[in-house]
View 1: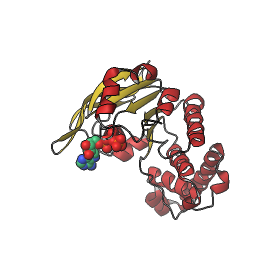
View 2: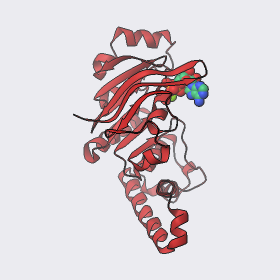
View 3: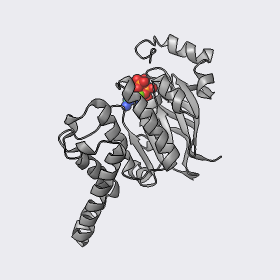
Length: 261
Ligand SMILES: Nc1ncnc2c1ncn2[C@@H]1O[C@H](COP(=O)(O)OP(=O)(O)OP(=O)(O)O)[C@@H](O)[C@H]1O
Ligand SMILES: [Mg+2]
């Protein structure tokens, strides 16, 4: 098996806080790696280091075997990474379809050049993006919302749109930061089925940060656990969640809010 993402000794400091502390982590091709840990343990920071929102202070990072430690965010996106955010980042006043089309244009970064050298090309690109957006929305069973503003949707539906937006670039690696947060149990079921199909039907590798343990247990091939920036456990989901070191880390953090999930 080969890794699509491999981090070695990756470290990120914010002033005196070591948010991610010499962590080794690998997402194998076609697999779902779960990243869990108490609040503030460094999960979102790790995600930001992988996608290029932030640069690591130390350590190595490779994507499909190539060194990407210093590679800029948009180049990583073009190389095949997409993500969703813990806090939704959709344009609320735009329609659902426009949100998807805009994501496509931001990725292409060709709009200025295209409109200068050949408007027809950019119009064709726009038409292609709209078709792709509609197809994706149909795949998510959200086609009825295409022309409606994002605000017409529930939070659960907006989370699906965030994922759909990431898929516009046809990524090989999808990074999801707490996709189940705030979802009702039936919507959690839908999300689980959907993420599984992304892996099984499209072969997309997934790095999944999630607090909802049912999602972690149902989906993840392997799990890495962080606590205060350090990796404290790694292995199969069923084994890891019972590991006394992991249980202790959650209890020690005053874990209450999401423990029942
Ligand atoms: N941009 C930043 N500037 C300063 N400190 C930060 C920044 N981002 C994160 N931190 C700190 O780094 C640590 C790890 O935060 P991070 O957001 O990665 O945790 P998390 O595991 O995603 O938590 P949660 O479960 O609450 O989402 C925390 O102590 C946090 O306060
Ligand atoms: Mg987080």
